[in-house]
Image 1 (cartoon, rainbow, N blue to C red):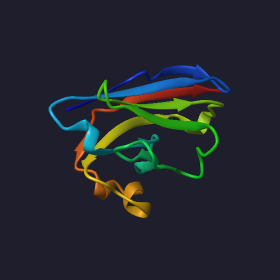
Image 2: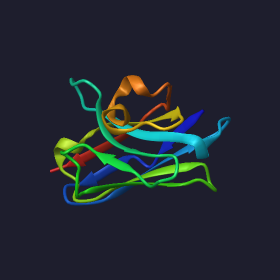
Image 3: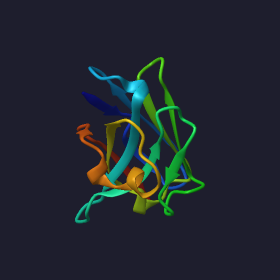
Image 4: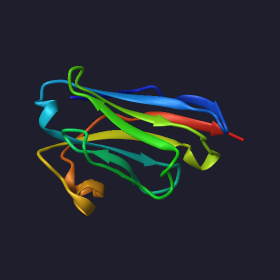
Length: 125
């Protein structure tokens, strides 16, 4: 089970940190990802992190503003979002896949079998 939290309303330029707590799985062996779905749009990749935390991947739209990290002792992955823009408004989902995902596989929704329920981030202008 994946439980995402930390969403909310923030002004443009502000920051939020999302958390995703995992249970019932061997989190330390999972590749973790964040995806988002804006109103009227398809769900898209945001960021991913390898099981060790040694490799990270970002969508171009968030690179330099977002940071994905994980704490395997707490079975939790984080998404620090800075310099938020109105176009970042979306429901953010965390996802997990056992084992290693590399390159484009780490950015593909189809690579992740387990999904959380989503948390809404709204950025006002």
